[in-house]
Length: 464
Image (tube, rainbow, N blue to C red; front, side, top):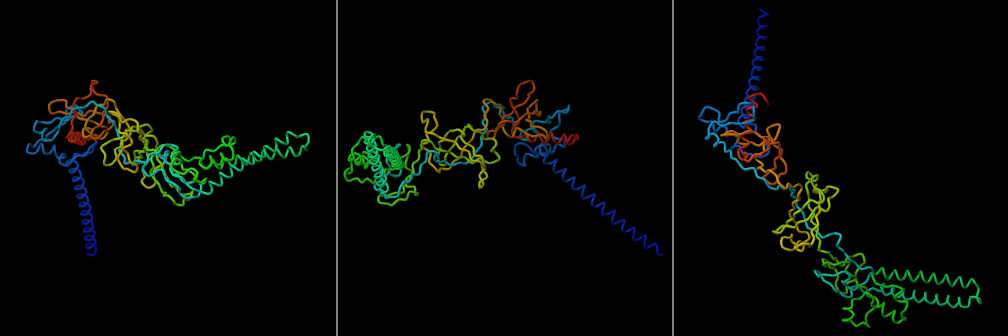
């Protein structure tokens, strides 16, 4: 009696373990069957284009009510599909499109902003402290190189001019003393003659330093121009040096101070900034005028770092400012050596000049405004003549890119190709075409249906 209850308990444990094992096997088998059914229903689709779920059921819908598949593989093991009837073919939504032969351009799209040419922008300030005596140019005025923008009154200017004149007089006096001693050198000691020569050289150095101090103010002053003049002529000339003739004609020349210093335009351009009014005290460290040459404008594009390797100097650029219908053409002139830390994009610069403007030429840069945003296109590749098909026509069959071409009534075969330059919804195709002639038509809409059918037949034949 004692052993029987023990055998009964072992039998129940074994039964529970066996049932559990069978349950796990049944669940696993059901899950695999569900995955297989879902893959068969969707035809394991993947490829170059994206397609809606309505297309995935095309072969099944075409065969509903017939009890037979709508399409079948072609004998011989080739990747070709034959439809049993015209009605089955029409239900798949397959359409033939012509293969076009035309130029193709591959472009990168990037946002950008218009900037002034930083090589031709000048922020001007006074070289000495003082106050604004007169303003000659205003915001938006066009200026030429050398035009006077404003006139500053500064005591420092008057002092430096006086130092120059005094140094010139001292040099002339030392030179005259030396000339007298040389005439009577037999009656004077040699030491006196040597000291006189040294004094002349020292006076000449002081004069040169004084001349350079005035030149550093931006004034055109030279020793050679002032040496032949009398003292009165020197004083009259240096008092108004650098001042424009227009100012001298309108002002009382006799009452003009020697403390005046003009501020000149460094190049041709437009006044884009002015921070000065008459009577305002100015600091040499503060810019008071800004001039820019707008004959050349920069367009700085922000290219994603994924496309950075495709950009090269000299590539064609087309830029369209926001709110404009004009496109400005240029070339890539500069590529940054680093990716921006904040935007993680690569800065690419193109320069647009005022050249052109005639019939058929690009618009002039005068239509561009600094700090204007816009969109640019960088041409990274171009084909003079290429075979072009819709993007949806090119499918990946698991090992290669293919397009499907008609080879008979209701029959389509996969033709291996190599995708090339992409432009919008079109893609270039190349390859070793049978007979040396490229196809004239390929399957456009519905090409994924044929790809799915080929993959399904491979799977059922055990080739996947």
